[in-house]
Length: 146
Image 1 (tube, rainbow, N blue to C red):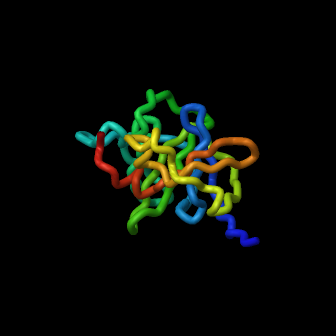
Image 2: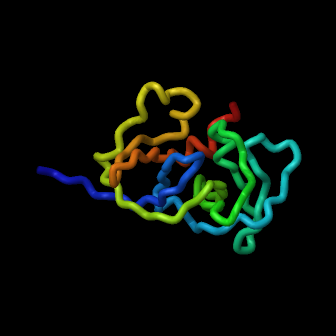
């Protein structure tokens, strides 16, 4: 019997659904305080934030995934990730939990998610009787606006 190593993920919530992002991709998490809008940016780019001495673009994942945007509250978080030698902030409804997911527990996204949603997903996993959508950071950041 072979087992695969488990990787650590940060779980976050968006529109009532659990998502995961690999901990190795995350630089930090913080509360969303002030976001400065950027003219002519794609609709899913909320603007830029000043985080630890750097200006970081902030992507609103609700808008990116086609959900209705909501007002930020005390649970709203900015997850700053590293991708292609740059830092990008992802605005999510809440984030506060870590979980280990074995690589063989992540299944490819179902064909029914092959459209817009599927391009942002690495796969689907279950942990503690929950379905968790595992993000593909490159897809979220680099995919063209739809």
